[in-house]
Length: 308
Ligand SMILES: C[S@@+](CC[C@H](N)C(=O)[O-])C[C@H]1O[C@@H](n2cnc3c(N)ncnc32)[C@H](O)[C@@H]1O
Image 1 (cartoon, rainbow, N blue to C red):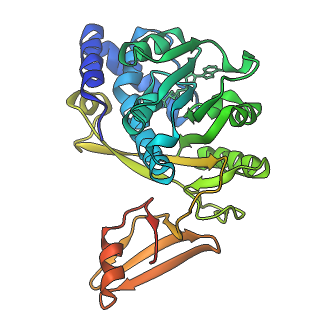
Image 2 (image 1 turned 120 degrees about the vertical axis):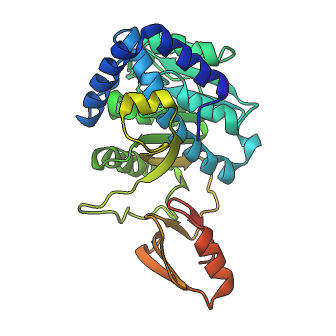
Image 3 (image 1 turned 135 degrees about the horizontal axis):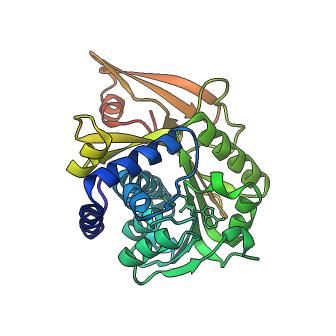
C-alpha cells in the first residue's frame, strides 16, 4: 500500500526542501513522541514534513484497509459524503476518496500546517480549520471518520460524531493496548446508543478480548527510500498496527468470524484464531476438506470468514 502518486511526489519535494539532517532530527523526535503514546504535532515545517514522510503513509494504509471493509459492507453508493475529524494532512479523507470516489469530503483540523498540506492534495474538499471540541454541532455526513485522533479529542467527541453520522461512523486508533482500550470504549458506548456493528466484529456481543490480549490488525506499507533512510532498517515495507470499529445506523450482514492473528500454515493444515459471536476460538482446516482449505489458505489476518 502506498499513498497516491501525486501526494508521494509532493512529500518528496517537501523533504528535499527541508534537507535530510533536519528531517532526520524531526523524524526521531516524532517517533519518540509516538512511542510514548503522545500526540503528533506539526510544530514547525520540519515536524510537519517528518509526519508526512514517516507517519502519513502508515495512517493512510490503515484507513484504506478499514474503509475497504466499510465499502464491502455498505457498497459505494451508500456514502455520498464523508467527514474526517482531526483530519491532519488528510490521510483518511484520501482513503475515503479511493473507496467512495463520488463522495463529497469535509475535513476538520485545528493545526494550520496540517490543514494546508491536506488542502494541497484534496483541493475540492471543504476544510473547516478549528478545534472540533468548540464546534457546537458537527455537520451531518453519511460517513464520519476519526483516524488516530480520538485519543486527542476526549470522550464527549464520539457521541457528537455519532449524531453527525447518517450512515456510519468509523474510529481508528493505533493497534496498541491503549489504542484498543479506546476503540473498545467507543464500541460499547455506540452500541448502547443504538448503533449496529459493521466491522470488524462478527456481532454486537460483549467484546471477548480480555487480559493482555488486544484486538488489532496490520496494514502493510511500502517504504520509500526516504522513509527507509529516515527510519533505518533494510525492509522494503513496514506493518502498521491499528485497531478500529465501524458502526452503522442500520443493521448490516456480518461475517461469521473474523481472523484475529496471522494464520498458521502447517503441512496439510491451516490454523486460524478467530473471533465469533460466541467468543474467541480456533478453526483447524485440513487439506481433505478441499473447499474450506482453499479459502483458509488464502485468508489473512483481519479477513472476514463466511463458512469456515
Ligand atoms: C495523529 S494526527 C492524525 C491525523 C490523520 N487523521 C491521520 O490519520 O493521519 C491527529 C490530528 O488530530 C488533530 N486534532 C486533535 N485535536 C483536535 C481538535 N480538538 N480539533 C481539531 N483537530 C484536532 C491534530 O491537530 C492532528 O492533526
